[in-house]
Each structure stands twice: as C-alpha cells, then as structure tokens.
Length: 60
Image: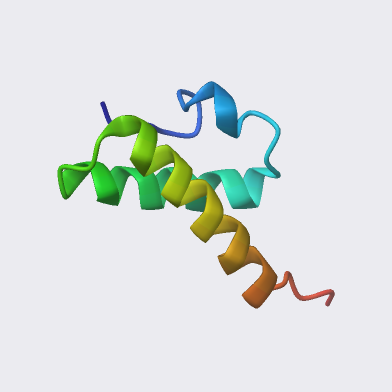
C-alpha cells in the first residue's frame, strides 16, 4: 500500500515532517521493489534520518 503525507505508518508519526516525507518517498520506492511493508518502513526511516543529517535545512 503506497503512503502519502496524510496516510503514513504510525511509526513515522513522531518524525519531523521533512524527515517523514523523505521516509514516505523511500518506503514507497522500496514497496515498488517488492520489499515487505515492515522492512520498507524500517529501512526508509533509517535512510531518511541519514539523509536529514547529510542535507541540513539552510538557515537563510
């Protein structure tokens, strides 16, 4: 089941919106690659957190 900004896994509820949106994007891509939902969520959450650390929001 693909997720979106309004309908996403409960485990993503407490992520910052920016990180959550990236996690949703990654999880949906993993689902297209036939990953199991639970595994896709876990991987996507970890990768989105990594992405956030490597791509900080500019303070301009």
